[in-house]
Length: 426
Image 1: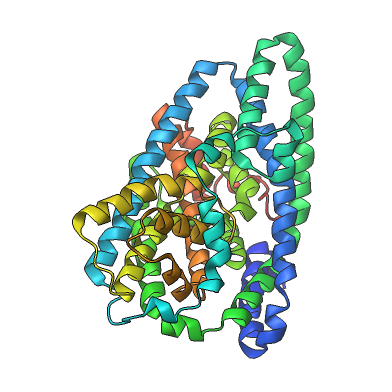
Image 2 (image 1 turned 180 degrees about the vertical axis):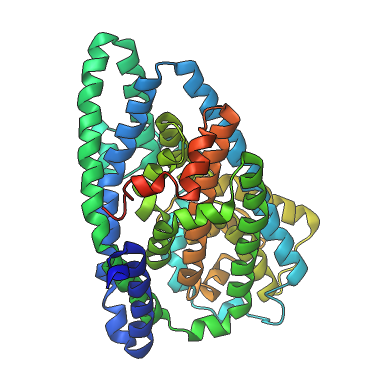
């Protein structure tokens, strides 16, 4: 049947099949984790080179370093405003609905060993270490470690160097553009196994944690999903309207990517494909190359909502009273710790641990209460982060005056898309 050739349908079938296998044969489902991990590794293998080539080539083609700097400043302003709003919304919903009330958990009865690894990683995160971590020890070390911000730094320096070299830089730029095409062709091959990766990751999640954990902590999970949905619909919907496009059409346009994110619980698994589609929507390559990779560390709306919502949930569940000053401190600390998160599965939980470690009022050991359902919330975090970064890129391009609005309208309406290939269906 023709519709089965669509990657969107294939990924959807993989997700549903994964849920069924995990529910019916939990042990077998849990053993399928390598399928999901393998797909994410394949994508991460090419993410670094794609980001490097896109950013460096974009700067070189632009030829205007000052303009690139202006785009970066506008992107950071947007990230800070929207991310802070997400944190405040998480706090507000938790304060209003009290999802943790009634649990009356004694933290001494929780298994602190189950979160010891996350807490250890959280303590390792310091301000000094974070800024030094932006600079790779070697050029290739950034690619070997898969550190996006380090790769962006190298790409910016390379792009500036190509501009400074003049004609010699243009010859090198031709080679760089050809290399980029090779990696994008590689992505077109890799995404064909996305249904298998989504199947394995979903089977593992359901098989390992089961639906029982969802029922026990359903109030937190449901509150988080509803809050994230409202954030996307209202906040990002308003941004989309101001930019001049329909959020629903945009979500339909990136539906394949969203399904892959749902199946793998990782927004990083679709980073190259998202960048390609944003370029097709009329965003210049330099803007895409700067905003999207940077947004994966500085503009994680879903993670921000999760941090403050989960923190207050744990305070309520353990009967830990918080005064106004402590809540504001929690918000300020979260504004800093959330900037260290990435699009990888589990990063949001580590960031939450880092936040609680800095605000000792809420016992860090209480994290053991939600470790079983974090994987379910990771899916929603990743989806919200992906949508947020897509909207952010379009918004920054519109603010900069570089967005091709005619192309955006035509592409979302399907006029131009009929004559162009979908990067996830090639």
